[in-house]
Image 1 (tube, rainbow, N blue to C red):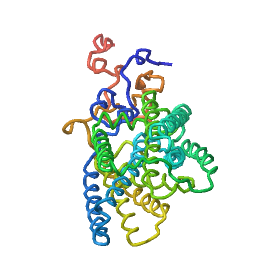
Image 2 (cartoon, rainbow, N blue to C red):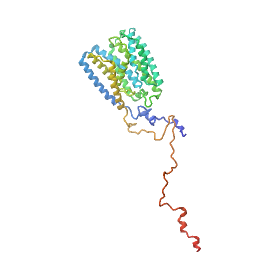
Image 3 (tube, rainbow, N blue to C red):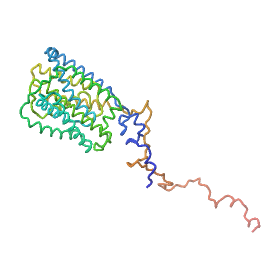
Image 4 (cartoon, rainbow, N blue to C red):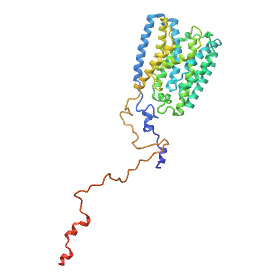
Length: 411
């Protein structure tokens, strides 16, 4: 068959034909080389737009109700930012890993209901069981995603349905028990969320970290497995996402002035996913900004406070849907202007050594030798005899010029 057995030990090549050693230092996705590196400029520009929007909405809130930005109202606003921020970080972590967790909302509402019922036992005794259940649920979700290699949104939606079944057992609002007041540490909670959001964005901007976290992102057939490393990172991201959602739900419940109303919690999922998309995280995974999540969360919370100052009844579904729609547009911008420049290659214009035409490497690693050229080809038509063809050997001049024997003898 002509297979080259030595081709099995050759350095692996990617689907583009570029050697893996070259792609490792040049491409953001060395397994399927997209020449060049992700661009961050689109995130910087968009974050300036978010900052301008936040300043405008804050000014509107100050003009409508200046008391909302001072004293106890400001502390309540900061805790709201931290609560929604934890939910946004939960959705963003799973989105960066290309396995979005749609169960963050139901998990947060279930944690809020649990804290409302068990808060009188103390913060520690109320949090530890919720933490254990959230970690176990996140692990089960992670195993379903990485072992079966199914989309995160589908598996998490199934998990969300299971949490909603537990929530539907509560038909009346649950009053918050206990005396834990997060407003006493509002500034620390806000600074903690801001630090985690910004540091996470900074680390995500580093090429090896971004590549590692987004390894689960499909690049060819979505059903193709991306390897053990991708599965491990995605599993950890889903577990961390579920735990963050639980902590966010506890803050939401503790910061509420009234009882925790029953529901499905899916409106919180829509709001969290929409907010993180609005901040510049791509819906496809891997790509994201630095300050985008912090600015987007602050913008949404301040907008809700401004709407409350006008005594408007704004549904969380409406805000979440609007933010999600805008976030999808941002995803298109990020994927269009954040990908490597067309034609970008390694170094300063160094050409990428692509596989030569006809050099076929089959999936098993064997190399098909080049097809030999034919030794001879038949002409399409018979050659036409030229008028200046050489004289035949039998008609050589020596047969005409030499004297004939019968002429010399006179015969």
